[in-house]
Length: 139
Image 1: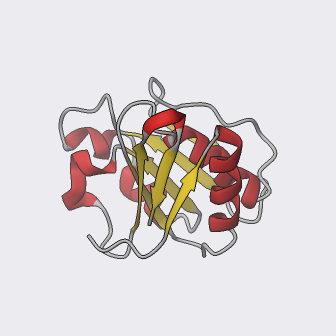
Image 2: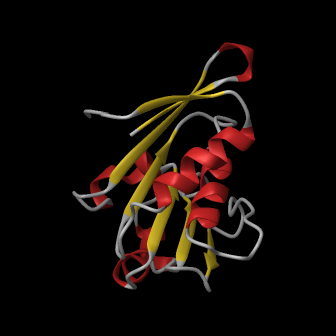
């Protein structure tokens, strides 16, 4: 995986600003694979995506509901969290392919669990925890 953009975030606010700028470059149908350890800032990044897309609803982690939909912005945002899924068939149960076809932005936490199901043109965003509560954000 070749990552051409690398930034250091020193706070959740900075992570959201980086993601908001990133969101402005996305087009309908974009899939953003969010990769990183627990607590690395994946949900904070999605909060920034929502801001950049002008979505008005507060973003929360979909760990237990699996998918949250945010509409009303420039494009709909579908925030998925695959952490609790154990079998590829569960993707079909949540309508994974349907979300990919809607024409919004799909932001998928733990996308690496089902790497074979991710579209080839997906953008990988890797969040890495560094020392002093900083994060490396690369895509």
